[in-house]
Image (cartoon, rainbow, N blue to C red; front, side, top):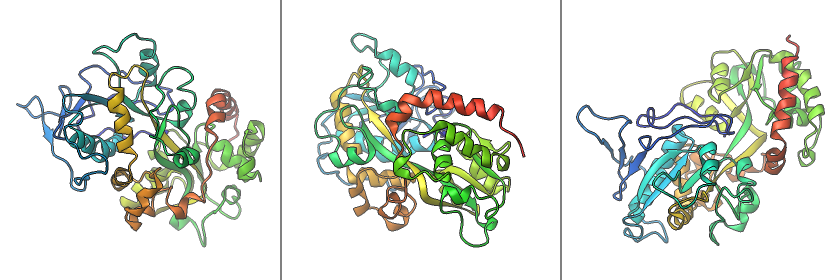
Length: 406
């Protein structure tokens, strides 16, 4: 996911933010850790949010965290005395993972958890080390699907133990030998409800039609998503998108750029905020940001049709000090019960679709992998982007520097 919201309390001064695409790496020290004890209680290590007199401030489990046994995880002493160092991207997604996945795993198995933030540069640097030491980086991390594509071949991660990734999950969301899908999200079309007379644009061809749907627009400042949307607007069928025709995409973007001008967004919060303050009427946006805007009272909505469905992935770094615990953790994280618990915390789509058997309909309605939504979305070609992202972004940026205003 390319947007990273502000850090939660307890992570503000201990977890450095990082770009999801790896453009900006975080640096973490041994002080920058959050620890979870065997009892499943989170305590903030030195450098985090602390009381005036307390070095460690315990935070109780939030209501709604799974408390019943998870099938196959009924031995609270399984990993007693062991530590798992685990991380994701920070912000509300990491907070949701902490509450719905990490804390319950600690409680179910007795393992202590140290929490970090995904940092590609440290992950790559650690791959060249010898035997893991006290300064090893992590045991299990969330990474983006594009980075995960060739991480095993590059020697950055360990092959996963057999049976962790269901073949149907791997087929739908990628992963398998070197990574396991963690959760899914979507880049979609969103709009102000008062900006339309009848129905909103249901395709990118309609989104590009400024006569039928007048009003200012906003797109992300980058090639990903924009190239797909521009080609769809130009009549390319979803099944024929890849390999992407960059030149044709840029020519299509030029048609609509006069309606964008200075509204190229750089963070996931911007497009929904611009909808809310009437700076834009139609935008591309991350689906969970639109849902958050609705919860904040904004008159915004989204269209699932022709959005892009992505999944972040779990990997076990090659220098993991506790790979056996990490593999067991991945099994836990992919159970239907835990996948559903995560969706209740933050509207990320379960990748184990059995989670919808226990997930409430009102929550299923706002996640991209729900049966009613997933068929309307397009899956990007992760391998194409892994191989071509640098060139595609260079072409996009070169065009944007000369893009006409209007």
